[in-house]
Every structure is written in structure tokens, then in C-alpha cells.
Image 1 (cartoon, rainbow, N blue to C red):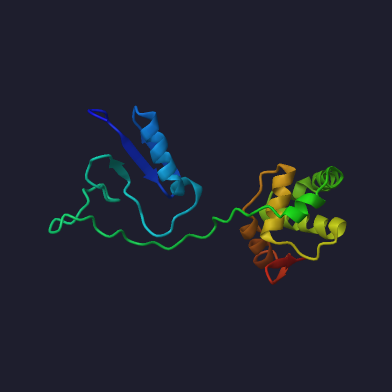
Image 2: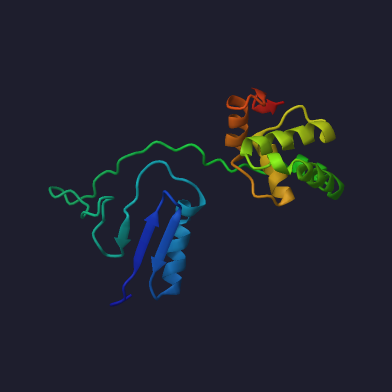
Length: 182
């Protein structure tokens, strides 16, 4: 790495990492090191907006970082973790129950309710009703909802938010012990 120019740009809000340079090994090393930025949300500090290898740290406002008196980087401000980042995890038992026959029934059930499929809260209620009728599930969890959307290949809503909004806004569900019952 002689006179080459390398940059690393990080946008944690959007989970974007942009690395430029001509050394592929160095870029791969940086991607691995910064995987935490684009794999999971980190809630403890704002990173520098733009940093260059060998350059002075850059604060979020674009000014040079570091304390003039000591020459050390200032402690980053903390921020609260934002809600709404819940993706869900697959429920292995439910995946096993969603056989090709059950998936076909669900697709038919969903197709018959196409006019109500636009809103995430309605989608959650439709899937919960199907699972209650066909699989005798007394309630659903965000992971159950995520599993159904994932297995069916549907673009799904944030399952936790969809169930909470369906409960509190639309009064479709009651909840107990993490399960939402129609």
C-alpha cells in the first residue's frame, strides 16, 4: 500500500458499507471486519461518516476528530436503539407442518382474500386465521408469521410490528406469553 488511495464509508442507519481501493485482499479484510455494520444493528455509537486509512478520524459533522489537548479521539455519543428492526427466525416445527399440500391450501386461502391482503395487519390476521383453522394453532408468534411468509416466498412485513399493530390498532388479537390469539 504505497501511494494508493483507500476509503471506507459507513452508513449505519441504512446498513451500508462502501470500500474503495485496488488491493482486493485489503478490501476483503475490511468487509469481514465491518460485517457488524451490515449484518446487525449496532446501538452503542455513531461511527465516523467517512474515514480514510492513515487519515485523521472524521466526526459525524464532517470536522476532524480528536481532542486538541490530548490528541485522542473523542468518546462517541451514544444513541438509543431504534425499534422495528425485528426480522424473525424460522420456526422449524412449523416449517415441517407447511408441506406442499398445506402451502397450496394457504395460497388458495390467501388468493380468496386478495382484496384484504394490502395491509400488514390484515395479512397477519389472515395467516393467523388459516393456521388456527388448518393447523389448530391457538395463537401465533412473530416467528410463526415470519416462517409462513418465508416458506411461501411472500414479501412479508415486519412480523412483530404487524402483530402488535393488528392487536392495538385493529383489535384483531389479544396476546399472552408472546402469542397473539384471534
